[in-house]
Structure formats: structure tokens, C-alpha cells
Image (tube, rainbow, N blue to C red; front, top):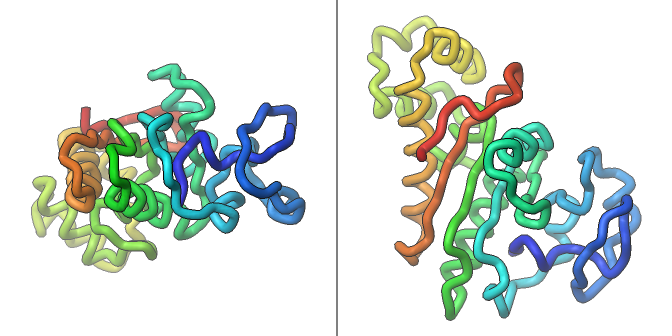
Length: 217
């Protein structure tokens, strides 16, 4: 389990000032990390973390699936670097979201006021369908049908990869559907949080534009 602000090392790594945890990061984890900012990388620090006792200093967290997502969010919202977590491997995003929910649900006091998700198409479908692995076409179909897409419209994608669906929606200017997918991800996470006071915002990023193209806001 983790929260931003307590996952950094007792050292300066890659030129950034880091906050203390109980043990130093393992050199191998940092060397193998492909993230541009390894001190923000969830996948490097997850093995080192234990359940948190004090969450009072962490009011917001932003979970991103890439450095691109982090930059796109920061350009709009101008948050400080220490609220961002980049979870960029196959199951990293889902694991990070589940661990946030578990940590908040087990906290004796309120741990967060807000959780932001900044994700690409495949990862926002994972959260919307609540699947750790890449969602099957049937999972994506269910999410999209609930967002207003008809069965007839989805027929051409019956045997397609789920990532082929995004260009059709985006370039077809189906932004109403994309917004509803963001709301589906928001509702899924909120439904797994015991506290109804924690606000969840979900944003969808497009790799080619390098910008947020839909949001639950």
C-alpha cells in the first residue's frame, strides 16, 4: 500500500529531493526502471512499502499511467510533483488504484479528500470494468453500451482489439461517450471506497494529442 509523500528515499536520486521511508531504495529497482522520473514510479517503490499509519499529510493523489499523462494533467491543473504517482506496467494502474482504496478503507481517520485518475484508453477501461488484466472485448462492449453505444455500432469491433475502439470514438467526435466512460471509472473507484467524502476525478488521455480529451468533471 502507498500514498504519495511517504514513498521516497533518504537520499537524492536523479537530482530530486526525496522524503524519508524506513529503508533505502534498492539500486537494482531504480536501474531497471524506464520511467523518466523514477522517484515517482509506483512500480519501483511498491515492494518497499508497508501499510501506512498516518495519512494526514496526503490530501490528494494523482495516479497516472505514463509520464505523458502526468505532463498533460500538470499542464492543466499545475499540481506539485509530489502528488503524482506513475504506474506504468501491465497491472500497475489497477494495483495502485486497489491499494489506494484498501489503504483508505482501513484508515481510522480520513486519508484523502480527492483521488485523480489520468489514464489512457486501455487503463480507463480496466478501472471502468474493474479488471486487473486487459479487458476482453465483451468487457469493453458492456462499458460502451452503458455509455450509450448501440450493439449495432459495436458489431465491427466484435473481433477487434479494444484499443481499436478509441480512434473510432475520438475521431468520430463521440465525446459524450468518452465522458461517460470517465464517469464509469469514477463510479467504480468510488464504489470501492467506504468513505463517501473522498472525491474521485477521472481523466482520459490521448497519446497522439498528448492532452486530456475527456473527463468526469
